[in-house]
Length: 226
Figure 1 (cartoon, rainbow, N blue to C red):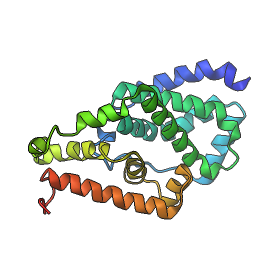
Figure 2: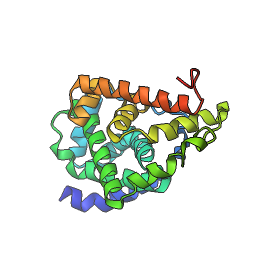
Figure 3: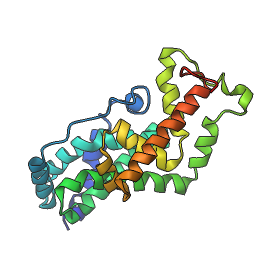
Figure 4: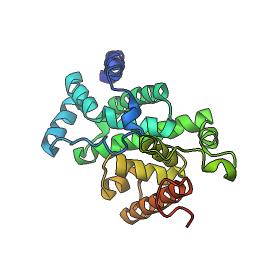
């Protein structure tokens, strides 16, 4: 009854909060490494979760404030659309809200939120069949045009990196974003994705190597041509 009675209030609060989030440019590539935020101490996190489970909208809003930018940034990086990212962020927190009573290990709450966010985003991409289309749009038409796709000036480097990240295979891109953008440890990524720590490390390494290859091809890194 708690979730049902307050879902409309929560939806309105989430929409109001999302409307005050800064544009996602700095979350989505222009400043790839500036989305990291400090998480609260475990005891404070546990209290907020416990109060949310007891029906406190104020406590849930605090949890929302802690994670909204990260979820929004992740959604934008995966969908490449600001409005879609806002809608998905709202959907994610409605799911978190409706299921928060199932949380019995507060230390795993961040990983749980990320898992919901990833599942929500990928479900959207599959449902709308936009994943392959967006990748195709970002890819150069042919090898002869590849070198002119990106501007090598410093102001455009971050944008080029963001587009290169979007071209990574789904699993590699996910690990890269969680580690490099959101600052998750390999242990947290493993918990979020249900994989081994070694797998997370291996996929991050592969993602970095593929990015390096893409950027070298665009002559944005020294050593292009090798």
